[in-house]
Structure formats: C-alpha cells, structure tokens
Amino acid sequence: MNPGARIVILGKQGAGKGTQAVRLSRHYVVPHVATGDIFRASVRSGSEFGQKAKKYLDAGELVPDEVVIGMVRERLSQSDAMHRGFILDGFPRTVGQAEALMGFLEPEPLDVVINLEIATGEVLGRLASRRVCSDCGANYSVADNPPRVSGICDVCGGDVVQRDDDTESAIRRRLELYERETAPLIEWFEKRSLLATIAGAGAPDEVTDRLVAEVDGRRQLRRS
Ligand code: AMP
Image (cartoon, rainbow, N blue to C red; front, side):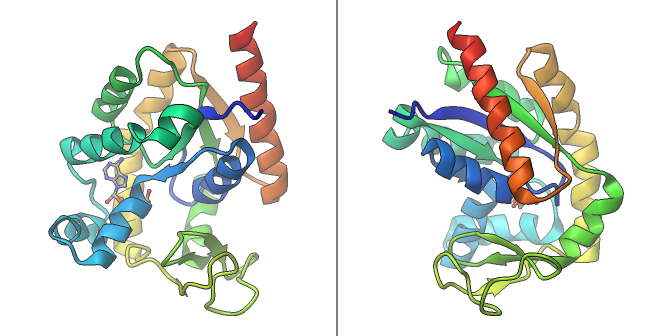
C-alpha cells in the first residue's frame, strides 16, 4: 500500500508549485489542497465568501489569517486528508498561519516542507505565460507547455484562461508580500528541521524526480 504523505510546498509565485503539487498528489495519492484554487472556486461560485475574497485576490493582497486558517483546518479534517495526508500548496504564507498549522496537525508531524527555489529573474516570464484551467486548476504555459487544444484543458476539458491576478501590479504586490510575509517561513521551518530546498529549474519531470527522492528520503529517516 502507498502510505500517503504530509507535505507543504513553499515557493515564489511562478516557481512551479502548482504543477509539482498536482504531480505529487497523484504520486502519493493524497489530496492537493491549494488555498488559491479554493478561493478562486469560491469567487466563481459567486457566494458571499467568494465576493469578499475576490477583492483580496484581484489586488494581490493576502486574505486575512483567521479566514484562511479556518478554511484549511476544516479541509484537513476531512477523511481523505486525515487518512492519506495532503499536499498543501499556498499555505502557510505567514508565520501566524505556520504556527496555527503546526498546532492543528499535532500529534502527527509533517513529512517535509519543500522550498521550491527559482531565480527572481525567471519568475516574471513564467507568470506572463502562465495559463490555468478555470475548472480543475491545472497549470499550463503558452511558452512551453500549452494545452493540446488551445484554450481547452487536457485534464478536464474546462476553459484554460489567464488568471485575473496575473496583471503587472498584482504580480508586483504578490512578490512583495512573498518576500515580506512568506520568505521568513523558510528559516522558521529550517529551525524545526523540516525544510528541504529543491531547485525548481529544469524540465517538470526532472523537478518531480528530485521532489519524490527528497520526500521518500525524509520518510525513511522518520521511520528509522
Ligand atoms: P495562489 O493561487 O496561491 O497564488 O493564491 C492566489 C491568491 O489567493 C493570493 O494572492 C491571495 O490573495 C489568496 N491566498 C491564497 N492562499 C493564501 C494564504 N495562505 N493566505 C492568504 N491569502 C491567500
């Protein structure tokens, strides 16, 4: 039996987190819990919660901690995540969120926190060519990984579009907030011996191989 996994993936916007998280979720048969995808789905549904979230998303601002923490706690308490584990993508993004996460995961720790590293110079080009499926969240790039049929998702047949927050000003704001709020988490998790920094450059398959080798190595260490 595949034993599942409990993984957090950190990285700058455009590092390839979403793409790699989907691959890891298939490999370890665990749910891919992507807070950005959950917010975008709420915005599309037109719910009151979605309408409130939209103003943060469009401006590239962070949704307040208490809202995100409550949402993730609820998702991780569902049976798939409780039994198999999860890959958390886009959470935590602040030290407050990391503290809350470690609290509600007790007593079972994380396997690893991956810091997917990418040079800042590469990020803007990647974000400009990024496209996502508006239904399932699959990621594409018009530069080097377009859907087989233009505008149609290979995975689910949904519409492949540019994200509303992939505008110049929202990208700039998100990168600023990453440096200010999220980058400190790298040291925070390192101090707790949970961090693994992996190069995000190269072909997606190569990056996935590096990630799987790291996660498997960590799990073996924990079991020994
Ligand atoms: P992402 O798809 O991860 O880039 O997230 C898109 C947007 O959703 C972010 O720019 C924030 O507005 C919001 N968001 C996602 N995750 C979080 C989080 N952990 N904390 C606060 N806001 C978040």
